[in-house]
Length: 112
Image (cartoon, rainbow, N blue to C red):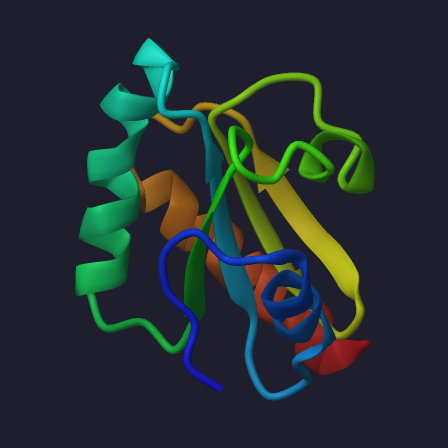
C-alpha cells in the first residue's frame, strides 16, 4: 500500500500494521513554527530512498492522533510497524539521527 501526505486514521492503522517494513509518521500542525523547521528533515529522509513507508499526519485535521499516540508535543517523528510504535523522536537535529532510529526500528520489527 502506498502512503502519502495527511493520512487518515485508517491509513495510519494500515501503516502501523505493516509487517514488511517500518513506517515513519511525521506528525505536525500547520500553525506550528517548529514543525515547518523540521519538515525538511522528513523530506530529505523520504528522498533518500530508504525502504520505509512514509506518511504525514496533521493534528489540525486529525486531532485524535494526540491521544492515539500519547503525544505531548509536535513535531513528532514516529516509527511504526508490526502493530506497534517502534520509536519516537520529537525534534530531530539531523537526518543521520532519523536514519539511525530507522535502523533500530527495523531491527525491532525484524527480530520481534
